Image (cartoon, rainbow, N blue to C red; front, side):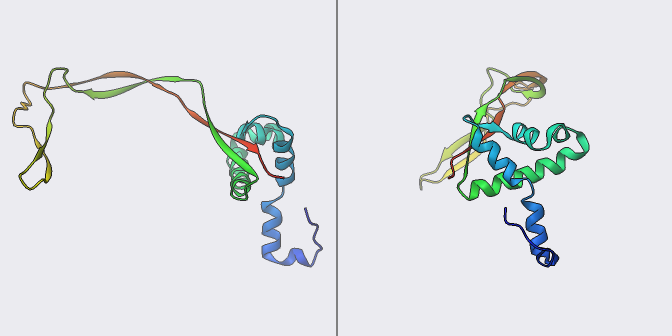
Length: 151
């Protein structure tokens, strides 16, 4: 980074830019040295060590790292990709419609070609009553990874 003298640091814009780019060289070095895409957690652990994982400082460090990576991506130095994480099974309590019930709404067309969605006249709320139950869902998280493409 470019060094500044004491007089230049008195300007607010200079001190703000110095604070915003404080660890940028370390992030760029780490991304350039990696042959594979890396996550934010790997980059943050390299730059700040175990302090990146601590609860009080984690929000500050992750926001600072996110800002640097966003600016590197906008500048065309870094590309972003998404990979699948390990699947997670969760239970959610949801309303389940009965299996053999007709649809609640119908899509109808008039003579002019207009389309409307109306209530189904054959739907009987007493006959076709659903129920709430635990539904098991499998969620595959998407993890954002970064890799260096700049010069």
